[in-house]
Length: 360
Image (cartoon, rainbow, N blue to C red; front, top):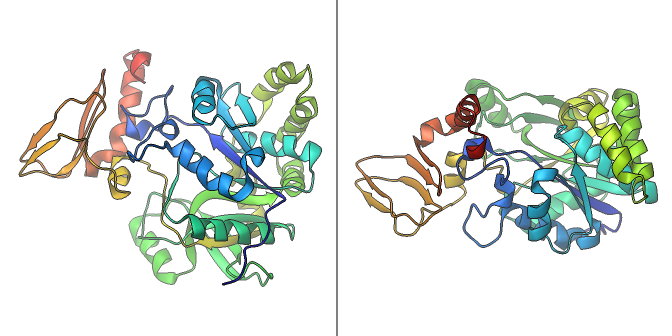
């Protein structure tokens, strides 16, 4: 067994945002899914992300970017967190990752940064660590690297990455060039992708030298680049909050995939390391059941099955219904089926129309 490459230059960035509307009423705007213990094992998704990354880089090189509404929850759950960036408003993933990268680059321009979402479930930490290590080695060559997920099924819920030729870099034996990113496909196309063996799911994990990321931004998103650079220059000074409040609303609202990953892949500047570990972003209640979430203790099924989560300890009995999904909190009740799990997000839209911000 070969030793893992040293990761002394790696900083982990954790964008912690979103509201998880497909997991309503458990997930709310003020208490989104990454702050919840959805698997019932005593650690929230954010804390599980911290655990994985702390093993790789230690607590001093983990940087979390979150919104104002989630700041107290993040600080409460991560007492050893040293680096927190609080976004004045949501601007999507590229500004969140870029501002952290720019702050890191102010003191360590040669640092490698890795972006890992706060709400993913990964079942094999050793395989995850191996994929990250290979991605870091590939990133040291100047490439933008993504960790793709070896598909478990022809899913239509994820985008895909088409791998090309082996990268042939010592220390990154699984790394491939990237041919292209593709959007979420229909089922026949997804089946073709999986059958070919050339495609990975796009899990939104990116590893790159901080200076390379910023150089790409300077070319492709100059306004965003200049803005995060200005914020970074003011960081840890008396002007930090004023500059952040002034610049942040001017930053382009865009995902990292569209801002740099897709265009850089078409230029031949990307690599992918296939991640051979179980992964899920728990996008809805069906996915939550698939990763092993159990119904609340005391749930009664009579000629029935499904997932029942009762946040207020109410005993729930289900009779004669199959693939049911029931989620209860102190102020709301959801009843649906696995088949319709994706439509739960429509509840938030309906609540907004009713003016029920208290339930969103």
